[in-house]
Image 1 (cartoon, rainbow, N blue to C red):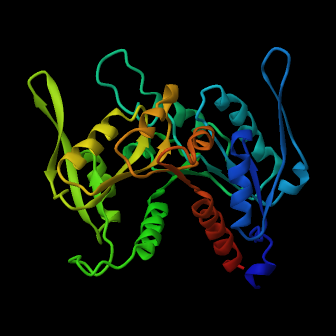
Image 2 (spheres, rainbow, N blue to C red):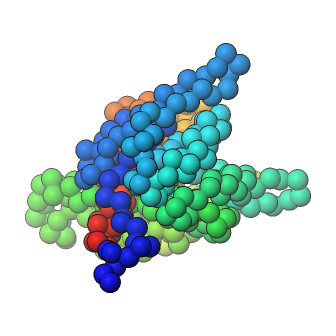
Amino acid sequence: TTMSGSLFFVKPAQNTVLLCSPQMTKLAEKVVKHTRNVTLGSITWKKFPDGFPNIFVHDVESIKGCHVVFLASFSQAGEIFEQMSVLCSLPQYAPHSVKIILPFFPVGTMERVDREGEIATARTLARILSSIPPCRGGPLDLVIYDIHALQERFYFGDNVIPVLQSGVPLLLGKLEQLALEMPYDPSSANDKFQWTIAFPDMGAYMRYNHMFTAFDTIICMKVRQGDSRKITVKEGIAKGKHCVLVDDLIQTGGTLIETGKALLDLGAVSVSAFCTHGVFPQDAWKKFVTGPFKKVWITDSCPVQASLVNGKGPFEVLSLAPLIANVIDMETVEQVSAL
């Protein structure tokens, strides 16, 4: 008896339905353009007069037996409940599998407790996501880009499999493009334009250094001088270099801006920055308009903020759409090959 004729053989799904939170609609539309066999589903997001969610998932019959991908945005605390309401309901419509793509894990910086009374909200959110029921294909995949601390993957329960990805390939592609566009300079010691990757602290270096093996690198650090702290270079040479600072996220941006200024003071020709997540609480992005950076690249992981800053001052948004599409297509190809 062949496997396909077995009573217990379940044919792998070949179609994928992409659902999304309202904040992620534009990104979802871009993702679909980069994918194969993926259709964009529809959800109506409304509220009752008392403020609680009034949500309707259209054409739920199309979900049965398909891969379902949900593109989530938890950048505002109030958004979590309404999206969790949908995620907890999806398994009852018998999808083959469910994959959650949460580009930005918003409480990643609160992953530990330094004194009694503090709450590690990263663990709390991991527990909430782990409460989503499994579907017939098993545990849910949870795709997160550049989570702040790698150990946070161990906060999730058995119902969820964290799949940790990075937005750095977008930066590498941008740097390659810019290098090709730079005119040849015969006076330069190098035969083509070179970038130097700088890290604002040892944590960023440990996290990302292995992704930049073809580049010279600089490690920066804060040193205490009396009652103040000063940014200095622990390792590497900034003089004469085009530097790109790399980290996972920008909050208020104070340290990143001071690090950029320090590199220029040390003789860098130019300083740019790449951070996957541009959070910018209280309009902190405005500091960068007159800051030291030639370019500040972020992704659309925080869609509201990305839309607000794109094209202003040094900001340029690199969309996660092709990376997300690769994650979706990879599963589809694997499932079809199983046939």
